[in-house]
Amino acid sequence: MDSDKSHPGWRRGFWSLMATQFQTAFSDNALKNLIILLVLGSSLPVEERDTRVALAGALFAAPFILFSMLGGWLADRFSKPLIIGYVKLAEIGIMLFAALALAGGWASLELAAIFLMGCHSALFAPSKYGVLPELLPHDRLSWGNGILELLTFLGIIFGIAAAGLLAETFAGQQGWSGLLLAALAVCGWACSRGICRLPAANPACAPRINPVTDLWARLRLMRLDRDLWRACWGNTGFFFVAALVQMNLMIYGQDVLRLSQAQNAYLTLALALGIGVGSVAAGYASRGKIEYRLVPIGAAGLALCSLPMGLPGVSLPVFVACLAGLGFSAGLFIVPIAAVLQHRPAPADKGAVQGAANVLSFLGILAASGVQWVAGQAWHLGPGQIFWLCGACALLTGAYSAISRGRFIVAE
Picture 1 (cartoon, rainbow, N blue to C red):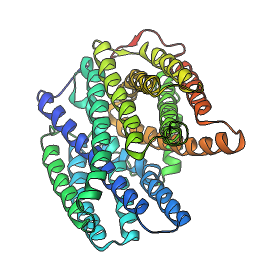
Picture 2: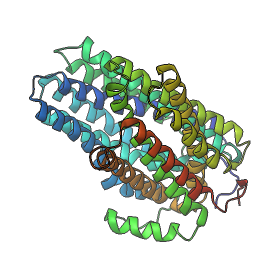
Picture 3: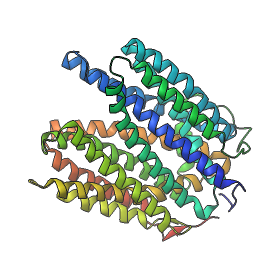
């Protein structure tokens, strides 16, 4: 386990990492949603249009399943700040490629750019999360995770908003959108240069090529640590519930509340802001510890807030308030779980554990797509009832993650 050590220049390194992460979350969502908006605004037949939209989401998610374990190995084998710098450097090339695809209006190359950005983010994530416990004092780890989650969701919000702005501003000249994103990638790379130089955690780590066998081996080792094992599946359950809520929210806004696309975006804004504020609150409430009592509190909040959302005739203000409460509870839930995933592994294995957790989280997201379809088509549940299903799943996930765990986890 980690000792209570931190890099002497952790403040500068931490905020450099936060700036890098904000830019990454912003650019990921700006590019992906810009391309989706261009598809939606095209004259394609409805079936082909919907297929391309679904394909865009799948192409972004697939690299997280395929390459997260590779990202974990890189994070263990080499210096994490070094990997972050190289990955951000690669983003500049990816965004220039995207600019070319957008300028030419070549749909296949635009989808390829989404896939490449997914690869970039899959390799970035293990180093991003794994470097936090190397930078921060232990009593700042939960606080650091709260700030990270806040800036991540703010980046997502602003990225989604920027996609719409870029689509309108550069209509017919989308190459400029790609060049702006390439310029932001340069800024992200410059920010990454401020992260403290750190040695490799496990320079003798053997190459790990096969994502399936490596994931299986990592899960077998993680199972030996009860806290780590439960946190891993709690993290997977969180992303399953989060994806199910997000997909169902768009359907609910359109079919039940009869909102426009712009108004529907405000619902996502309420959810994301709630998660960000809840994450920061969880970081401060931890008071220098990994406060595991927040997990069942967050799970109970998710279940309670979902109840009014499924009632027929719920008013828009009540729905938005419950949605913000849902996000706040989610922030309370995920921060201590993320801190456990960072703290419990041995220093030489942090990248591998983050890679495994990343793979499972995206498998959870894919499972949510299947459940959304089954709940609506096979079980004939309405969007409101699916929110109840989300609350029940959150309650079960929280109970599993926190069972037999005391008040908090301390550094060993």
